[in-house]
Length: 311
Picture 1 (cartoon, helix red, strand yellow):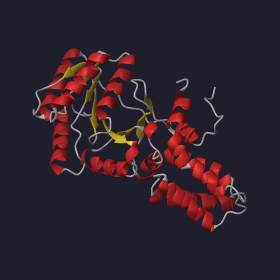
Picture 2 (picture 1 turned 90 degrees about the vertical axis):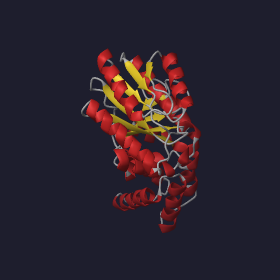
Picture 3 (picture 1 turned 45 degrees about the vertical axis):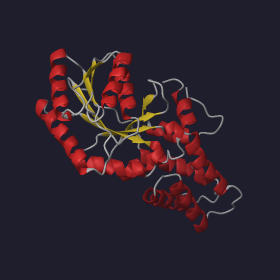
Picture 4 (picture 1 turned 60 degrees about the vertical axis):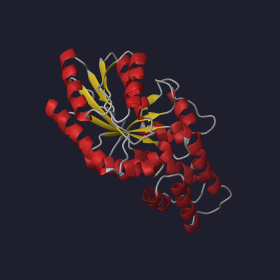
């Protein structure tokens, strides 16, 4: 989409300052590549929330390439690092699976990550693509959460299936699927309570919702998206591991990328977990949920002041 590279580049400003500019400062004035430089580079990567394990792997790759390609100028490490980060992130954009009729998308995450707003943005996106969408107010712990989803539903022109506060989320899920099948809905997007990822009883409830969805429609949910707040850095990886072990995550949505210096966590997530980042949030607008393009992300992260949209 025209202009999105520039928007992504802008949203990565603080992360770029925390990573790329520090790398530039590290190599400036140096005349040789030595162990001390590699150690300092590893520290920069860790401080940018790339993660210790991933930082160690990236630096080792740089060592091998410097040796193999006989690179002597420390300034060359920046381009090599961009290339290696791009490799870690992968080459292809992971798309969300909406091929089923209806496609059922379960959205999970802890409190305060922007989950309900992400659901609204995804619903808006589906509507813009001509799909009929049904929202499900599965966060029955908070009446305010149900009301919030209904406000979004009215704003974007999407119906919301709800029960009273305190109802069984699995029952809401079942009723929603019956309604979706009866009305020829294309996409069902279900909200869930913003549960603490270390609370076993809440994870068990999510498993129950999964079982009910699968009984009502074999194969559902077709996507289970975990919403992560980029500003939490390494804690986002811990959340992803626990949710994935409990219910199986098919994709990640990284929010608040525009307000953090910890965007390097995207690299750690991709390196340490076999879960693709499918969307990134780069602003508050309904159109600010975008497909995660690994190559574009790497280019925007390392972009210079004058680098603009290609084509």
